[in-house]
Amino acid sequence: MNFADLGLSDELLQAVVEAGYTTPTPIQEQAIPQVHMMRDLIAIAQTGTGKTASFVLPMIDILANGRRRALMPRSLILEPTRELAAQVAENFEKYGKNHDLKMALLIGGVQMGDQVKALTEGVDVLIATPGRLMDLFERGKILLTGCSLLVIDEADRMLDMGFIPDIENICTKLPPSRQTLLFSATMPPPIKKLADRFLTNPKYIEIARPATANVNIVQHKVPVQARKKRDVLRHLLRTDDVSTAIIFCNRKTTVRELNKSLQKHGFASGEIHGDMDQSARLAELQRFKDGSINILVASDVAARGLDVKGVSHVFNFDTPWHPDDYVHRIGRTGRAGATGRAFTFVTTEDAEAIDNVEKLTGGKIPQFLLEEPAEKPQQPAPRQDNPAPAKGRKSDRGEAARSARPEPRGAQEMKQQPDDSWNGPVPEFLHVSALS
Image (tube, rainbow, N blue to C red; front, side):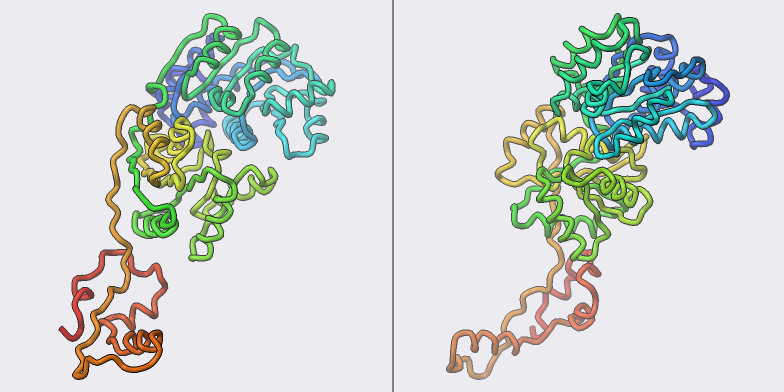
């Protein structure tokens, strides 16, 4: 099957082809016809399956006919984070370039004046985070009575972030005859309750078993001492054929400290976390997308939905506290049919957390046997004619012994190279004393 078989308009198909796509993913193949038929929809799909296009594409065709009115958006897409909202907006710009549709983005961290101005001119698509939308609604700057299509994206993430009451409030202000599409990676009871209340006879689509990880991702858990985490991370970054990587930490302070450490060791890294303002976060994401940096250290604010092509690796520097976050974190790699690798560092304190992850995903994560990073081997002290210790302070004796040891062959050359120049196992000859 190709996109032409899904009933999309010629103008939309042209934009899809120009974007480099010809074959729909399973979620797109199943969801697009249902949306076209104006059905309510519940779609359970893991990240990286192309779900954004599965609602953006048919929405563009549906909204091609109709008239914009001031302060009354014709459709509404709710996203849990600013980054996801901005990403959906990029999709509309990419696929809707041959249509006369206007879009507005309502997110925190951006001047409200420009957003209100866009609303007053009338929009076909409003993409919003719940908090900013409720703020403008309560100020009387927006009316939802003309909204005929609602998308609730990343519903389980909305639940995690405490947005369900806001979503329920928003739904009560929309026309009861609207079309509603709900997308989620998992289906916990509160989300099912939300769907039962606000969707009418929905079509149910499930692309993967809830909470399963992408089969295109090779997963490993790495037993490690907490104090050795940075050493092990640097070793893997240098030896595992990493092209681009996202490294997840549980705390914002860890994100900042780890990024500084990586930069100090010569890695092209950046960071993104909740304490950064929106412009700084978007700028850092853009640097990652355009290749200015190839490593992004992130808190879970970036874990869901961010679609960056070609992410080869995900590292869980901290085992996630919530098992659902594991699925969403590693879903940043292995996207759109590509393969990826995910490493999760596990300390003794993480035993319960990794057990919960494995219960959720339905299987044991293979343990990665880490090769020790190459280090200059310890050499035995040279034989001496007079083994009697020299007199003097203990520290002086130790220094004298160290200075008397010959360096192994090749040591002078290795000293002149940067620390990351040797990635392989220790050559056998370096284990042999020059005097033996």
